[in-house]
Image 1 (cartoon, rainbow, N blue to C red):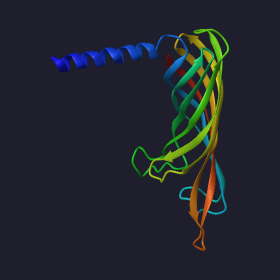
Image 2 (image 1 turned 30 degrees about the horizontal axis):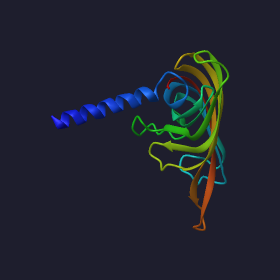
Image 3 (image 1 turned 180 degrees about the vertical axis):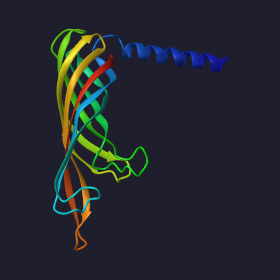
Length: 207
């Protein structure tokens, strides 16, 4: 009986905190996520010789279309501004790294921005344009290859909240990653990769 009362009390407290956390006003705790298309997903690198597997010497770049998505979690200090941690990335198939003799997942790539992002809304709830700006780190992984070291990144964008809790936006993310190559003399050198992607996303945000 005592355990049942304790469990009921804890449930009521959890329910109350959840209701207080999501009161329908864009103020306080916020969490959301969205999906869409990566209209452009690009990477580029300039290496002196063919020292990275699958990449010829000189400048190499690749641009693809893929699937985009993001998630965010953070805090809104009023109905017009919120600061969140955002992961904004895309997945696509790289033609450069695609080995047709390997498995079906060969060449599958994912790149993403992760960092602090500021959302500013210009109008009332459910009918407002918004802007996005943030800084963080960029990551890139190709199946079958060691993940690059992350580097600095940025994100900018904007869109429209067309209904309460629902919005559509365009996000431009860019940054760099790095990989270490071994030179003929045995020393290692860090090579920087440039990255950029444009995501068009529809997002649901709880607040």
